[in-house]
Length: 324
Image 1 (cartoon, rainbow, N blue to C red):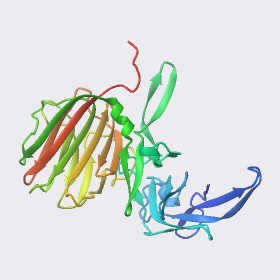
Image 2 (cartoon, helix red, strand yellow):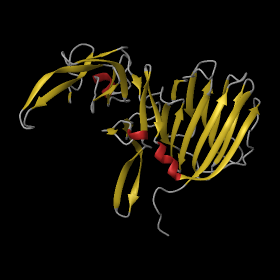
Image 3 (spheres, one colour):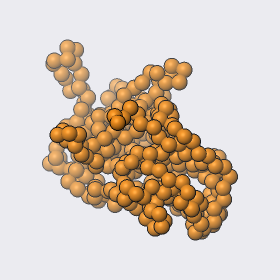
Image 4 (cartoon, rainbow, N blue to C red):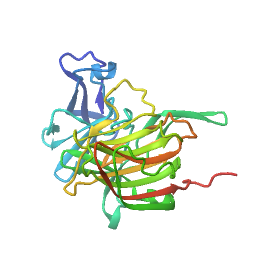
């Protein structure tokens, strides 16, 4: 659990994570401090200034451990767990973002599921997105769960992929292969539309410095949300027509992790007002501020030629039967 100081702890350390144990679940003994979150060097709010944290998780992946904590935004560290001293020792001092757009991604999120492929163990994260709300009858609601994700440790990064069970929502399919697009061209010319879609696109960069997808485009093509892969900088971004209510200007940008095959894999789920985007295993989840009538989809390239090796689009079916 966490011991919170609300900024009153001296020095650069913020809240601490402590281990407790009990033989009867009534009387508890503190065993020591597992880890202390640092105060941010350039804080954007009181939580970062204090080094605030909550909902800590220590997750084994083979001989490595991932320590995850509900800071703002949520971060994780990869490292070692010393069982004798009950200490987590990170490989790197700076933590990494669990989600590159959702600052409150991690809210009591972890579960372990032993019903993976061939009976293998898998780790699934259930996480919150809080910037949607409404009413059902007279009952208000606030926040939704993002799409459940399977976690895997890949070097210094925690990779996430949508649970394969999400494929059960796939409806009518549209596919294309081997498309080349020059700078300034509209790949689909407004012919593909939808606001409840699963999109799986695999790119090779070619000579293009930037390429990607445009989501929720307007009929004239001027308004859209852009998923951009910047090969020159080795970065991705998701920007335009989305709600960002937290004061973190760096949200929506992250490292573009290119594997040995040189491909960029964009896996996108559009669900009316909200979205989940997977970019080579890193994630951005959020909600649109777009006009409901803007439902276009397109590919684009900048400063060169990009190659779309394959594109699959499925219309998403409801997860439950809707009333007439």
